[in-house]
Amino acid sequence: RLQGDWSSDVCSSDLDYRSSAINAVIALGCVSIEEKVADAVFRLKYANDAHSYADAVKAVASMAKSLDARHNWRMKDHAAMAAEVVKYWLCDLCPSCTGIGAQAITGTPVLGAYCPACRGSGKRDYPWQGMGRAGQYHTATLCALEEAERRIRGKLLDRLAHQIRDSGV
Image (cartoon, one colour):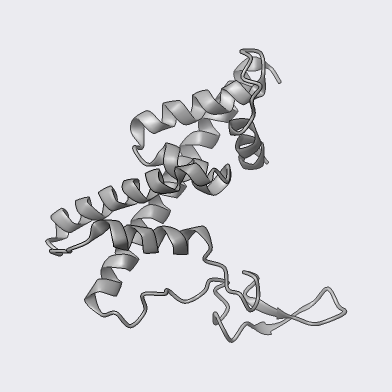
């Protein structure tokens, strides 16, 4: 619930100090101090801010550069790889089952066997599958982005919950 409220608040033009929208913007700003990718990544995915796409790709390219330096991958083009990773991260749902992981039985509220396209995961295959070592770099960068997203989401929800508790709402 807080996550949905957050995305509408960030897009709000009502940033009066008494509004809840300002709390969301302040929370994201505070989290962005600790997590460099927070602002671009969350604005892109949860506020549907298309203008943040380039910033998100730059942030993920920076993550890839850091991973490259740490693991000595010797990658050539961090930006191109980051763009592929961000595209997948934005829409990773299996097109066959729309992320459910199982086949729907038409006319019933019951799900059937697992989805053969995604093998029950609810996610589509990586577009970089079969690229060998380069594909492994893409996957490692995606895992780092997903972990950053989990950390950021947790910190943001903690910050918003703290603000709500303090305001007595």
